Amino acid sequence: MILLLTLGFDEKFQYRALMRQGKSIEKVIIVGGFEEEKAKKALESLTNFLKTVNVPYETIEIDPRDFENIVEKVGKVILTNAGKDFMVNLSGGMRLMILAVFSAFLLTGIDATVEIETEDLTKVYYFRVSDVTLPSLSLTKDHLTILKAIKDGYSSANVISKITEIPLTTTWRRLNELRKEKLIDESNKLTTKGELLLKIYGS
Image 1 (cartoon, rainbow, N blue to C red):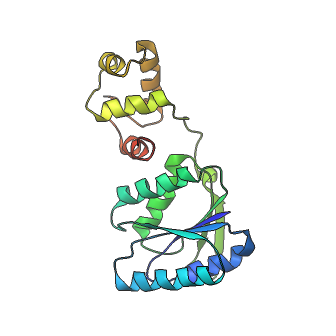
Image 2 (image 1 turned 90 degrees about the horizontal axis):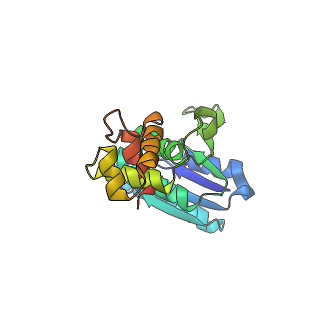
């Protein structure tokens, strides 16, 4: 199991998550912004512990104030590890980062067990990402190609069909599917969700 941790200035929640999961951990992924001294110290303490107990780890350094940056970076790492069992501890770090990490799982469609410990340490709550998501479209190459064309400024189905070389009837069908999933709006412009998904899948 891969344990993904959000880390801020204090690593106590992460230690507790590691102790709870114990030997089931295959690898730890630590997400955080590590420029500030307190964050650096928390990261150093946590990684020293992981080295001591011989648990492999990797870090995803993000700007904790940039939602899209976090979603993109974490989303790409999630996709790289698709097929693995994920547990995500969202008990540490800035709220924006926590929300962005959760959003990355929602947008990639990769399921995970979410673990959250309350600030007063009295309760640990678990749920699956799939518990809070509706069935979603499985993005195909056609969908991604059309999203990229829209990002490049094309909105007409006829033009999109021509530049992507996707048959017009298929283009119409894919546009309707993208609209239904709220990846594009009624005027065939990318929504925020569409932009984020394209950032994760599109390169």
